[in-house]
Image 1: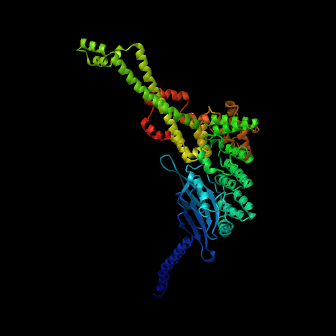
Image 2 (image 1 turned 135 degrees about the horizontal axis):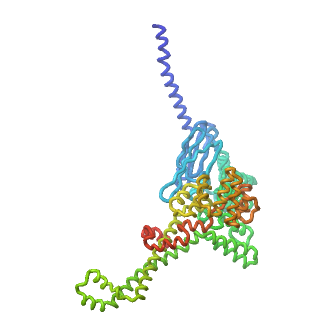
Length: 614
């Protein structure tokens, strides 16, 4: 009995000991997790805090009124994930230092830790509903797929994070009073120490140092634009900031670094179409900006061309610049810019088509209404002309059948051949005009609903791909655009399938060759490049991929920024226009012959498109 009691003792106490240990462990775990907190200290600023006593630390970020939700997720190993907008950071919670920073193409709406990795849930604005995509990030081997966002507010996040903290410093073109700059220096230096991967914190510190005459300013700016964690969306904005502040050598370096990153992330300037995106990305406002009589002004114009050669109003801008150069004795430069303007007119077909279609649709709708009124008026006039004869015939045939009476009432059987032909012509004009108006409205609506992301340098990303798949009619040109979108998005199998099913395009063969080369099929890739040149001997990208030297401006740019890599050929302006029109001009003409029967929801389209006329 005594031994039995001794045996029961440990058995009795063991569960209680484990319960106490687990409770203590749980409490310690909760306390450890609570060490890192995210607090909103004002309407426009959040603060991340951790540690205690002398080891306490804090990091502040501005949020502004952009409408994104800041998220902080503590994880094992003294780490925490912080996300705001499209930017994700990894924080060492023991030291209170940011050790990782990554830019995604959409807003981060959720984070799901998976050991040392994290699943990032992304959401972007679609036409009808948000579009989501998941990406798993491994900090030890980060691969972050990047695509242009459809939400332009995401471009403002990096600047806002600093501007909301030090608005007097992050304001280009104005000098901070020396006393205020001295007071802000410790806070700025601490912000850079806590988050050494955010370039705008360094830019703020450099600005304060410059305003007090400290020569370290230049070195810190160079550090900011050399950070591996920054990209063109920040660098081009930093270049604009430095231009307004008069630091022209530094702003030139920032632009060059940003433009290089623009290419390296898979963008192509020939797909940069929307002016609003350019203004959000690169908008210098220095004293020489845009002045063609100064070297810096001419340099700025050249940069605008390098970024957006075929964008909104670009053909007109390049033509005006060519005219200016011609009147000021620069004949060679004028000739160059006239060629660029002509090229832009050819390649900007989609935007020019939409502008022309708006005015043409006005005339077509007016023609439909006029045709309807003309047909009614013409029938009434002829009816009045032949009414006496009709009455005499009706009196003579009082017991005529119903159809005969109706025919007699319309008096159509009295019309001459010429009158019938004229009436038929009026009906045909209205009928075909109705069909053309419907086709134009459909194309305009497709262009008007074109995602911002699709005109920002790349077709990659879920929003653009979804748009091409769902809203564009099935045409070979649509498939070419979709294949290019797949390729830029990294979906090589889908791209290869579509390229092989659109062999009539030289672009398909060149881009297929790039895929084959990436897969190690060098001989088949060479055959594809040669096939591309057979279809279009002026396809400079295919010639470059076959080892020939650069032969135009864009192959020179590719060779400069992506040496040794095969070059893609984006869909041309005419291809994009045909895709949005829903077919070639001949196909549109055939559909228009169906008149009202070729148009779906014509009234709804008028209701949607009408605000564009205002």
